[in-house]
Length: 107
Image 1: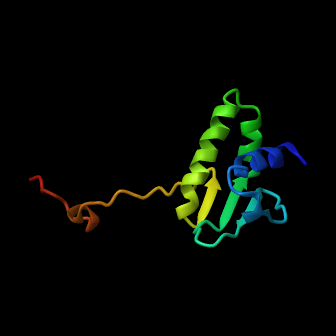
Image 2 (image 1 turned 120 degrees about the horizontal axis):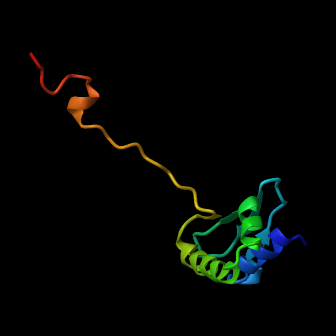
């Protein structure tokens, strides 16, 4: 078992072993399937590069503990990802600017 898998296993160890199953490894991710009645969480996805960075982190133990707590809190979502995907929304322009009309004319 490589170091990335070892850290991923340590994180998912907070869930009952009989409901978590490792899926076939992929090049950039480690994926787990979760099967339990009454639990919404179905997939756990770890980015391999992020796990490698975690290996060299001086605060590794603290971050793993945080990820374990976050995973336990995520059982009400359909998927847990590390790192989380962030969606950056563009700010909505006020209507007067969106039309391309000048606010005031200068004479």
